[in-house]
Length: 403
Image (cartoon, rainbow, N blue to C red; front, side, top):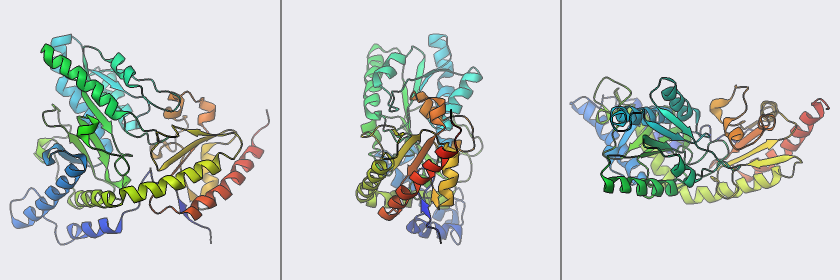
């Protein structure tokens, strides 16, 4: 029987048994609608409130600043579209223009596409920040991109494809200084700062006060919680227009009956992640380094992303002379699950927008390969990959047409 090795934790993680146990009562006997005033509803309301407190404690904010969503995609859309719409009238009055957004080009597609949509309908002007060969944004480039009509900067905390950690706290300090200058001048300007922290929650410090962000997105299924639930931190006083109309759930910011079991699971996953953070991070980082060292022994294989400023769970490469999709299929035949770029771009023939933004040629970007590790990953699994991958690369190169 073939080994089964799962190395696609950045795409999704298995549900923690403790999280499932916490969720089960709210899928069975505790089924009240949290908006109902009777005891059934209030039991569910108390569970949602507890989860909100658990998320707020992790982020060092107040519970009312946490809005539960269906996922990080929804949270990111709410952040970008909600801020832009809230600022449209005032920016037109003061600057005579539409709101201006500053966005990194290596964001998840939900951020890229939300920004492009606003640009397409004439609701916003967008500046795409440059990144270096490691995928890093330079805070000075953020400052240079600011205009009189800038309302929002959106830069992800950890890139989901290459694992590079962005200088979020430094960008936050830059924007705080500029906002303070505007306050002193009393010119009415305020630039808001959003980060997609999906890949950062379980490994990095996500204290929103230290980071200096006004909005932060997360998704439960990236840290051993259930799929179908996420959250958006919105700093108190941040103007934002809700994108989903109907009831007054989530402080009027997100209409619709709350996914109580999912929210409970998100809160419990936060708690479990906090307990295991240091131990899990060190274990995974050691295995990741072992994997990187072994893969780079294969000729003409290149590491992508920053070696030091990298999340502990992501190892990404480009392989000359081998297609990413072909490598994935052959790895899967050997029981190894990996990805080529991000999970949300699988099936597309275009090269990774992340890699091309980093200056990697489209031809080489087609040979991208990402392994992402988790708390169940073992040394034996890494060694098995290092045994099988060289044979797969050699086989594909031997089949490639000779130039």
